[in-house]
Length: 448
Image (cartoon, rainbow, N blue to C red; front, side, top):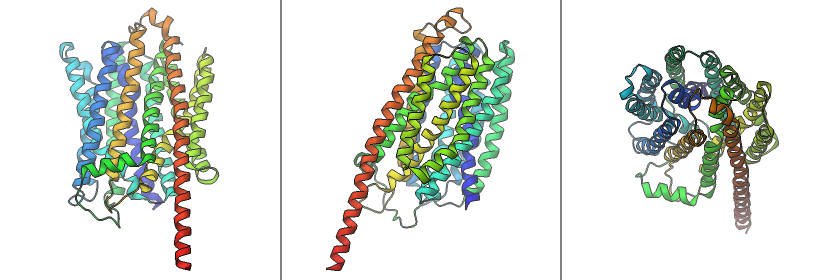
């Protein structure tokens, strides 16, 4: 069983390697390699992620409706994985397209990539509800998933140290081409291993009655489940405020420390720290504190690292130290957001036996990706507000303000998440008290 769980979690390594190329380098590729203005580039990524988010719930609903005919995720892996690989390679080779068609080309390829990735990403994420039912098992599986995600991110960021250091645009273009080919193949191999482990896992719960799918019933379950709504809100805030840090580090390293390679090393440290500290967070959640309390602790840790960075980073060693601390916190935050979702779904009030796990995961992914897009667009807006022009001396004088704005944005987000998680804790406590009251009543009735 653990081996199967490990193979399932390994899928995150392939997905993370592809996602990191876009999360960290898509904006940089558009602005500094293709020469697209920062405001247009940021909005382009935002549009693609809004599209990605919109397709997530509809694909999830489609899978939910077709569960009687396709009771596993095999078909979606076989369609989504190769299409994703093709889209990745096509996007990072946009420099071969004539300049007058470049904007249209990158827009269409981004939309194609987001759609293809969704086809495999949504069913893979939702398998967490079906491959394990115990909260402790799910925590361990999510820890493995985030660990493999960190390894995938680590591979990409370590590779980036080489191609960010080049000053020659043609060399950078060639490195992006090679990276996209390498990681597309890597993604396909990892997803094949993952599929081998989950191809027979049913996406129908054993005690579930597959009654007719009712969209408004799904919306009703979402609306009246306060715990799920809070988890959605926490993820929204996390995605908006923390994903901006990666792009901020790249631009700060290039123009604040005047050395692109330092940005690549910093991102590598960030990814390494996320992977290493996952085991500490997992132990804490399983043995010392509840999941939501440990999530609060991770947010407090991120606030601490951000406050240190706000004071000022004057050299690359301080930048690495900040990335190490922030990475440790982010690993726990991302992990617990995923653990809290299936826990909240399991405790939702349901008047029938049909479950809508896949659809809820689809809406959750929609929230995650739209807010992620807003995060990257926010970086583009901040750059544009500071009159960003690639390789301009003006940027060197304003980059500290850009990075400080991103840090403060993340700081406000972490404080907000702590408030939301405290509300979630009160809901959990009330549910436990209600359950104990019901058990006492049942015992008294039986005694009578």
